[in-house]
Length: 540
Image (cartoon, rainbow, N blue to C red; front, side, top):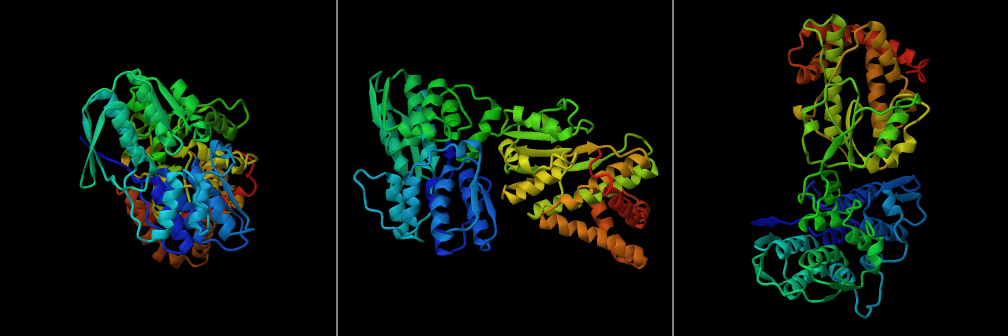
């Protein structure tokens, strides 16, 4: 069996920082790369467009490397600028003492750091990469390979690991020596592939291993020893208490604690890891195991409103991702499946459908309008300029929502979805979309003109609070285009083909005359909703 390993985070992140320091284009990142690499890439990309003196917040999730590298980078290249680094709660709890990553960042910035006795391989890697830039290439991750060594040592057999370099700069390549000496695993190198195979058991002997220069290997090695009944005497592990979790305690208790290395080590040792706790694996090895979302429906708001209910739901949740939806929608088929996710906020499609065999004219107009709105929503999201989303069908990473919670305008009864989108863009979070039938939820149209206008006025009432430039520009364009249509009705000859095209993308069976009628009455509806929204901003 052949295993494709992820790229080395250590090498990729150092390449990114060197590119930023030298003013070179950043290498491309993709969804199958570790989250840590994507986080640092996105932060450096935003810094490359930074305008001096403007406040900027960079959200780093739980990426310690990005935090350490950027602390040095900001102090060196952006001194005194109002730039804030933030992240998940665990990241903010990290020990503030200088680490090998701090020293590495100083070296990459050209600082003359004396060579220390018994220097960490990570610091040595930084020296060599700084000297060899830009002749450094990506390679597979030896840290990720450790979990497959663990698997073979416990289960026997053999595996081929792709993309590893025998002469790698990575300190964790020592995993081959550790597993050969302690657990009888043979490593055979052949043209960038490593065949690892079980040879023999070394017996239940005391293993003494110093992890000072390879701390990331500790969870895999410790659980291998435990499964094989070998007593482990581990040294050099003190700083493991300050990683993504307290790894010493997490190994002892067999707990994941939202720690990617703990999840993989426990799974390879056959300890049960709930599907929802596997999501953290994407931090370093996106293709190792599936991520999972757990739909949760209905929360008692105790008479305090929707936003209180939503806050209560998310604070109580344990899943990495939360799927938000309204109670009165028809859930999409994907709710019953395990799915692979990427991003902090994932915009999902909606489709409006009447419950009646023969929809009323009001329902037909709403269905056509909703189709156009949805097509615009998904197109802008796919182009990286999202201007709309709906809490009726939305996936959000729990830590991302918590980072934005204070910016959701609790004084306004609705709008949690759009204010969440705005806050996510301000924080530089990753906004994605999934536009497939499996993820499409069905909503129902309003059945009376009164209910229809109340709903639209509520939507319009949030507009004065929007601050995102993309959302503001889009809203102004819609309002002005429709006001211009009232002044000059002939503009409909230009507008109708465009908007009917949007409708047909989502609802191909929409009759042209329904779309035309919508086009004619839309400016009046927009004006009523816009003006009515000014007096209904605090009413549901």
